[in-house]
Amino acid sequence: MILLICGIGAVGAQAQFSLPRFDVEAKIAQSVMPGGDKEDGTLKAMETTNIVLGAHWQITQNIALGWIYSNSLRGNGYNNKDFKFNIGGGDSQAYSSYNAIDLRVSTGRAARWRPYLNLNYGKVEIVEDKGFRLANKTNAFGGGIGIMRRYGNHLYWNVFEASAKSFSQKLFWADVSFMVEIKTGFTYNIGKRK
Amino acid sequence: MVRSSKVGFPLLLIIGFSCSIIKDSDITSLSQLNQLRLSGIDVTQNLATTIVPTATIAVTDSIYKTPITTTIDLNNKINGTIVRQSIFTWPVFTKTKMIFRSKISSTGIVIRTSFYDNGNPRGTTVSQNNQLKEWYSYLYNSQWRVTNVISRVFATDTTVYNDSLIYNTQGYVSTLLRRSKGAPLVTLNFQYQTYSSNSLPQLGGSSSAVQYNGYNYNYGNCNCPSSSGNSCSGADLNTNSGQLNARYIITGAQTNSILTQLEIDDIKTGGGNCGNSGNTGAYDTYYFHPLMINRGYFTHGDILLNIYSIDWWLPGAVTTGGPTTNEGITFKFNYAR
Image (cartoon, rainbow over all chains, first blue to last red; front, side, top):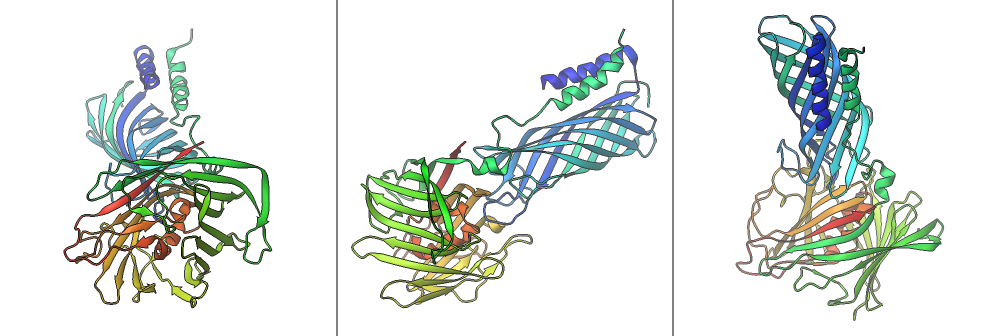
């Protein structure tokens, strides 16, 4: 977390001295990773609540390229009970994290509501703690769709974003190969007016 | 002079890529997972009338300095190598639902399971004060599918069961043929069904019960909590007269071959998936069976453990106005690298 704060500080310093076309974002995400409900006691699903941080360089008014980082605040695995969207009712601890290069495309330039699409590629890490920790690191390709509401020249509320990531490899201990997420948060435009 | 705008963004990338949630001590491959060693089993009993402290079955591993080459099959033609043995020291319980078929109790009970080099168990012995009391052997075919389970219980009335397991085209035990000295061949047929859209088959779905030893076994998840899917399985047991109706459910947690928890509940309450009700008799007792600790090492071991409820399940007596609260026993398996 200290490193992340330092990272945001670096962006802040950047804004102070050079004012580039730049924005930073912070979001809360709820992810679900479906498993294979196959045999008694095997992993049915994992869910994690994550904080997502990111920074984007606005190449044009519609296209931005940047980086996103996500880390778990909490999470559960569901092994000896079915998931049924019973968030927090699992039987093991689960964590997820990802680092990805992110391409964001704004599909509208309306004064208030701005829909956007994103595509990203990077590394995903998944950990399940059931007395011993199982960990997997794999590449993932993902995309999403969202809508943000503009508040002035700098602040945007990412009202809702839905995304999915496909892993290049299944977890070695479970039939988990993709993640779906819903997010909400804020984006702050540091540089010139969008 | 280097402008901060030229270093800020790369710095962010470096910081981001350096944040990992994976620790050096984490298990990151299947081979590492399979190398975990069982270090102990915490046994917690939920009994209706007595509070029994959680006890631990201490487990130690003995690696053979000289592996033993033997045969794995019924016809003694396929070679296998025994490389290690796990030794379980059974604790003394003030009161317990778990007893032994050989009628042993108290101190000095030790269970040993030997393993082939591929991790499959060869057999399990139960002894007390170095006297062999029970001996369970597993025989395999060339694909390491269990073909025979031989159970030997040495008591005043020594019992030897030689069970042949016959599989259906999906790889599940469809028939168990039980041979024992002086008794006619017993044939038990098992049927399967799935409990959720993408689950693998579980025992159940049979219109006719499996009949054995005067009891009718109706396998399924009727007594499991609603929407439990494949996380829970069990059976109803009754007699032809209909006086007795005992129930159990098993809930397990397993990763690959690593069994982390196993809970067996003696169901006395109504409800469940099928809305059961009615007198279920006195509390049941469970005989120790090696599949309770070795279930994870077998393909579809959860189903094998249910099938072998014909041996480990001792239903309570018929009662009028029997207990209405559940009892249970939970095994929590602890592992070390």
